[in-house]
Each structure stands twice: as structure tokens, then as C-alpha cells.
Image (cartoon, rainbow, N blue to C red):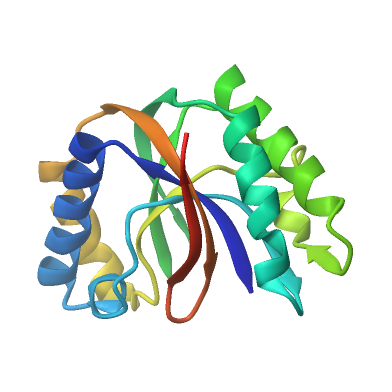
Length: 173
């Protein structure tokens, strides 16, 4: 699986990483930290045989997209294993999702996940995954005391492979 992800300004990144690190300690689940998964917002997920073929697409997206504001306002779960924070789905994020989708679908041998289509995308930033029931409870206890809404900026896009997370290309918006 490959992703096009949005990365954040330094302050937002630091705040999110602090929460990810805190959840890992509080819950005993270090999946995110042990696998060096950076705070990111997945814009699209897809399968391809040639991920390097998307590097020129990343360069085109760099010209089409710009930095933009995000407001991270709520913590949620994809039960039973994932905890995330979600941004308000504003026009900036909607426009980004559409432009990225259009750029990627035109790249040939690509199968885009049904969960990352512009009309069925649920934007989220994973804070923890592979949580057991007790770990999820500990993670909630932690975020109740340590999460507050965050106003941040998206400043970069990345093309990455998953498991483990590895950037193939990264562009500054």
C-alpha cells in the first residue's frame, strides 16, 4: 500500500508527536513510535507496481496546491484498534483531496482504496493503532488530559509506502 500524505508545520507536528508519544507510554502500545510513523494526514491510499512513477505527479501537485490551515478538533476511534484526531473538513482539505485524487487516478496502473475517494474520505491523523481493549482505555485516559484543539498548517506532501512507513518523495507546498 502507498499513500499520499500531508505533513504539518513544526509546531503542529511537535504537538501531535507529543500526544503520540504520550499515548505510547500510557497504553504500553508503541506501534507508532517503534515504526517511526510521523504525524500525517493521508489524502489517498492506493496500490501500484511502480510507486516511483508517481514522483513527477508529486512535482505537479506541488505547483497546484498550497499550504493551508487545518483545525484539529476531535479525538475518535476506528474500533477496535485505532485512535485518531480529526480535522474540520474545510474547503482547503476538500480541494486537496479532489486534486490529489484526480492526479493519482490519471497515473495508469493504480488502484485507489475505496476509503480514500473524495466523496468517501474521512480525514484523520492516526495517534495509535493495533490497540488492545485495555490499551484503548488507557489511550483515552491520556488524551482526556492532554488533547486540546490544534490550529495548524499543512506545509508538505509526501509519497510514502506503509509497513513500515517510508517516504519515497516529499515536496514543500
